[in-house]
Amino acid sequence: MTKATNPILTGFHPDPCICRAKGRYYLITSTFEWYPGIALYESEDLIHWQSKGGILHDLNLRGIPDSAGVWAPALTYDGNRFCLMYTIAKQIDGCFKDVENYVITAEEIEGPWSEPVFVNASGFDPAMYHEDGRHYVVNPMWDPRPLDGHRKFNGLILQEFDFRKGMIGPSKVIFPGSPRGGCEGPHLLKKDGWYYLLTAVGGTGRHHSITVARSRDLWGPYEVSPYDPLITAWEKETKLKKSGHGNFVEAPDGRWYLVHLCGRYLERADVCPLGRETALQEIRWIEDWPRMVQGDDTPADTVEVPDSARADYTADDTKDHTIDDSEDQAGKTAGEKGRNAGTDYQICFGKAGDALSAEWLYRQEWLALRGGMEGRLRFSDRGLHLRGGDSLTSLFDQSLLARRWTSFAFTAETEVAFRPYHYLQTAGLTCYYNTKVFYYLNVGYDEKNEKRVISILKNDNLDFWALPEDEAVPVEDQVEHIRLKAEISQEELRFSYALDDGPYHRIGPVLDTGILSDEHAAGWAYTGATAGITAVDNFNKDTEAVFRFFCQKNE
Image 1 (cartoon, rainbow, N blue to C red):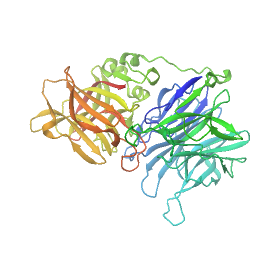
Image 2: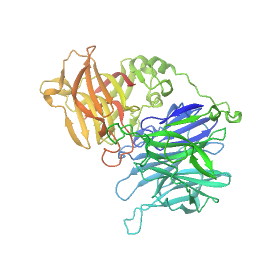
Image 3: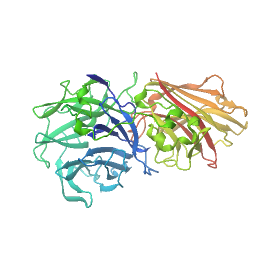
Image 4: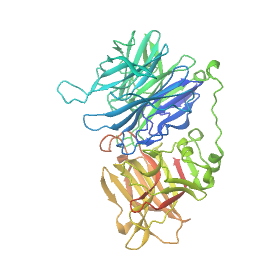
């Protein structure tokens, strides 16, 4: 037995969906406005997960609101190919949800993936079920009419899908909803003559949970489990708050597991800066109903996984498919450490130079906002060059590269060479949640003294604060490089700076990490805190910041 400690994917990894195929487990999670779309991980044993980057590399999400974008992907394997369904949420305020659902396919998990095929727009979180060479789509039906007696969730609908013709035949509401409310993120599976429907219930916050229902007929009616909910953290003594939204996978040895989202609070505040994470539970079938092995609906902090649960345990499943654990030459030169190599991350951009690329960074779990940064990102032997983009409140063309927070105590550090000539030009280190909440330790320009300055900008739900001018740090012209550091410990964030090879000095007050959370951010907020590098030019768009390294060290 090997013990898995939850969460198995730390930091912003919500809406997990797992699939076993070709001798491996594959796990995907939502990315919302972040690029590339749909984070993909691969594992042999359900415990150690290797990042494969993102799947959707042709996204243009310019103008998409915070926490819209790519929602709740669902990955299945029909015996010949992978099928990936996902939602593009374009507008999510008010009564309406302007969403479009798509499916793409590939023979291998790393592609090439087909062009997206439109499925429907009746609701979000679609999933596909395969049986006897036919394909079916299940998703929530959305009712935007503000009329008495109507509710926004109008049942889970099922309809057959043909990859050449699109939706065919009639649609039917197969499940009106859980006794505890509307349902999202549905998944269908068949076992021992029963069709099982897993649904996320109770929103995405503290009341989140999973309901299971079953039927002898694919088209229903579906009976809710007498053990409902399958999992919930509401009013439970567990660190894995917000537990819900997930699906099952069967291991080669016949054991069953559930992956689900969860959130962990700060020690002294009920907020989750790390966002919603991914956890693992073992499932037992009792009287043809799934239940967690611990015997109740409380998520467990640890799960024992036997060697027989390895995805390649059955020889017929391997099909000559192996994980390449070696790093490419650019990675070796850069000194990158992946998720499987430990919890720390460090990269020296300049040493790798032209060997690096944006695609390589995305494979190492770096994220950009709302699309690629063509024309605003390049590499040289000096480091990573970012051309100044929009402000950190823009929904369009930000020059920002970031990594998820994965710990409640860590240090993020970078070094930048930047010579702005106008106060509308800045570059530096940001702790960023979305356009409404972030901290920004930046190098800017003081036009009165005609000098660069180091300062702090805070955005707390569009209530802005900057370090007073007399506390900003002037930078003499002979200084070439400026090191910037953020130290996070639970609810406290401290910034520091250093000039060239000099020592670090504190700058600004102790800041509250709690604002970088779903609970604090105004409006829809489904993502998680990140630490990253950015360059802003709202003057002539002609400045460039050069970042030599970035490191993220967990305590």
